[in-house]
Image (cartoon, rainbow, N blue to C red; front, top):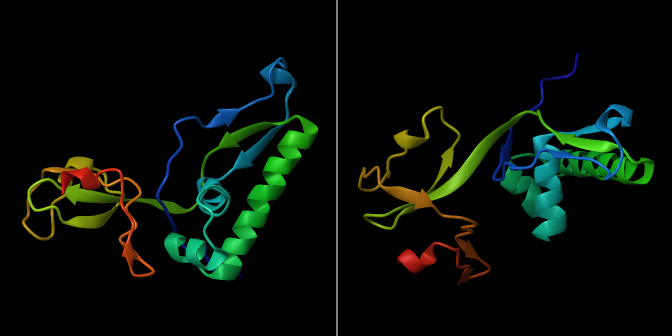
Length: 153
């Protein structure tokens, strides 16, 4: 019996979750389902341009598992494009994770999806005043990468 899949860390949830070929009625289309973690794998590798090892680390999975997820995503997207199928993004085994920045002390930390997003509390000063820290990456190769909310420093 295979072991249950490990939860994957995802930092992006799409607003648009359905794509279909123009001019073809929905009832005439076959559909491909892309999981949220497959979309995250595509985003990290193909949009962010990260190496597979870094992508796997960001998602909290092994490199071979990341490779399998990425290959599955590429196959599904190629199948939909070549055969004119619709793409639905849904499901998977993931936790949404985001970096947030405290407006009082400037501390940046990672929060994993909770039922009540207002419950975030700064681990440093215990303030509940925060903003999303965007693509905060912290320190990389000895140089701090600036995020979109770093102007609040």
